[in-house]
Length: 445
Image (tube, rainbow, N blue to C red; front, side, top):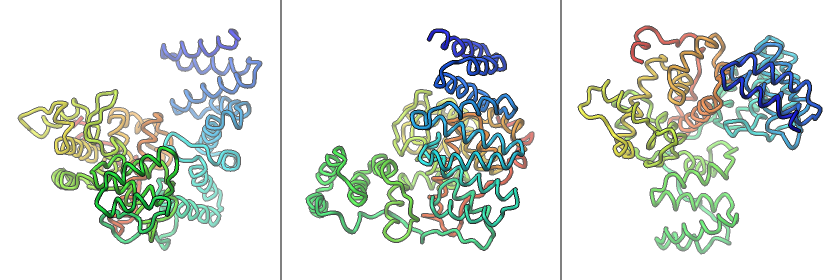
């Protein structure tokens, strides 16, 4: 057992010292020498994770991924194996090996349809989109279009649904509901929750909320009852719980039309509207993008903080706010107390978003990646992988958190546009290489 742990310890030590090539070689040696299939699979998986973080697509990376796929347990280690299959297909695609990529993604679709990635979305959705990409490049255009339509319709307003829509001919219609203003409580709720409905109708919203919350803790609510509980939270301006209860319990797998519209509106609200609209206009930022960022960053909680020191609705770092205050020639530098208030936080968050949009010339994915990971990292990624198309660039972002963040916020932005600005249609992602910062943008850094 000790001998099996030594290769991992060696690789981790080399990685800590920054000797990444030696660390990758140690992982490969350990995986090859391991007697246990479980140890072999885990060592190969850890090595492959490091290689992918470094954006390696060489034969050594392929070898690590193949060993991981072969030896990770299909059930006990489904998430890790799904990642390995996804990555093996993507590396093959980047190397121009389209039949291999298509075959590996087909295996992923069949064997791990429910495994989730870092965005808490299924690899199934992701692999379907990319399998169709491979098909289109191989000349199977009609099959690719059928699959893209399936992705668009099966996963409404999702990141991959928008990408799929833009791969279809111009005649394909993006289905959006009529513009809506506010979510309403459901028209009907099961008889088991009639007491909560009566409390609501009597104006005892807090009592109705407490009744439903107790049943929620017991796992005894269906969709319509959750909508009523969401409305009760919303009536008390508890925007976090109002949207969270639907985000975590409702798959939102039907378009926002008819009876399903209220679910979407409750999951994608527009709180603090006066502050958001004022700051959006002041800084030239789409207010729907501000809400999408706010939803992901804080879940609409004004006083929340992160371990890294980010604060408030848009999780603004005090140093970032101070820098923006200097750029805006403001006399006072905001402190932590100010950043936990709605107006100052949205002011500095929107100002930072606007600066990043200028820096990356309006490219949404680059702007959001920089908001999460910092412009220095994004500039480095542009140098290394900026030649890729936008969808591939996002997949190749080496930081799991930043990659997931971009996809989550873009999904929220697509949903907000579909709900509140349907005439605008979904966002599009142009190639990143046309949005590399010029000297003026870099000077702003």
